[in-house]
Image (cartoon, rainbow, N blue to C red; front, side):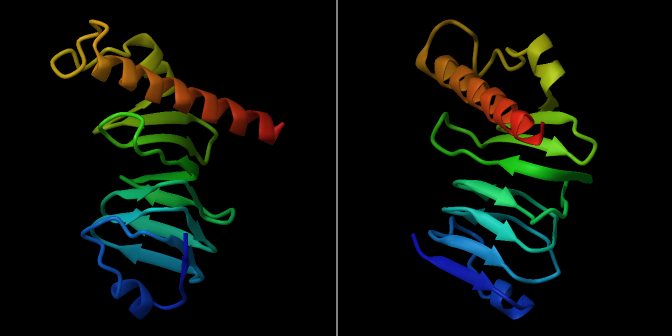
Length: 155
């Protein structure tokens, strides 16, 4: 997969952000602020802060080089991003204070909230052993493992 280096706002504005960008993004700006969504087929590696008005989705990982990534008003220091585990976006998230969250589709909840009530969407995922429910469980378990590995890396 090729890598696209973003050094200026003009470089970023040239991207067609209405579809998945099929390359890795390396952002070499001190701060990137944008409205709308950003989808990268590979990883997103930034050397500074990222402030997004919409979604950020990468096929691999998102790294802000020790700075924070602000999404939906919260600052995160680490974000995983997985596609293809089930039909929606899958993202384990670690906030600046170390608290951990998981995003499955449109639901972003703390790990504790997920553990208390994983089957929070019975209309779409009724926990009846069907393939969509099994894949959602797999996505959740993958996020938990990603968080565990990243927790171990901090010790």
